[in-house]
Image (cartoon, rainbow, N blue to C red; front, side, top):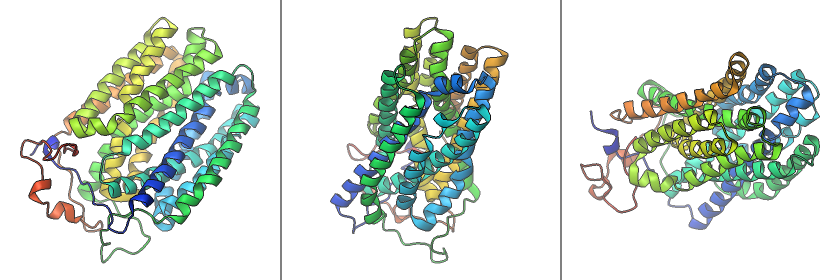
Length: 443
């Protein structure tokens, strides 16, 4: 079986009717929404210690309440894939952005942990819908552009997280959670109102491939056979890394404040540094994918994240923990975007939804697992499970290095690029790209 580093990935050609200016406007608007997604989520997570104190929750009770975010997200993800097929991922992105902006204000209005868990279901549902619709929109646009720029969109998400966490670090000591999160809600609605017209008026990017003659319009593609198995494998890789991102979001600040005596501002800085490292790693993601290929990028990312999280969980000083969080962010940066983008290239919104559902299952598992482990043992020991799963992602990616990308079944039209590749575009037998700057092939 051929080496996956020697297999040219499916990179659809841009639609002939798509003007560069249209693609540029869509890319800018989607980038704004990725920034908003990260900004709102980070604004919530840096106030978790204050919300914990406000509700009087124990670590395990808080973990169960935080489960609402992931549970709400996972429940809506597969539904969002269907909505994207029916209404278009751009329209669903606008609606979910408005709902997430409203939902971010709800946790600060709760005074009991049970009520907190219920409103986090709403917030999580909006977050899950926005994640799938944004990634589906980005997959379509990446296909139209014809370069592996998916990490750049996720860099925008991390940039939003860095700004949101940094702002939270500055105001955590002087502004109540209620005023802070209400302000975030107002800002989110304002950004959505100004950016939505670009998405609602623009045609959805397309690769120009004709639909399958027997495929009903507006119906999602079915994942069957080897395609389904490959998407599941990508989803497991995403799960291992989403677990780490969720752990950092929900427990990183608490670890710094509770175990190392950091001030609320320094504790919030931990997630800000993690998000900054994720941003830097994702900004370099296109370069890494073009030079190293997907397998080496995934393996290097998983091992780096594992080393960083061991430092972040077990180091005895605040500054070493912050350093470990940064290294972990660099390692985790490109694993989730690569997995989701590949699933979307194989099966469209259905692939994105399936891989994202599995991926955010890591966030579903992470908060309660770490909460219970923290109660039974210690929070630092619980955080070492992030390193364990990051190692698992690297092992899975390496073990799958000889797995070929499965051919698309009859329910998904097979692109012409995979049927007949010009010799100049097929790549050399040694797996090196035939032109400088082209993506190094691998699955």
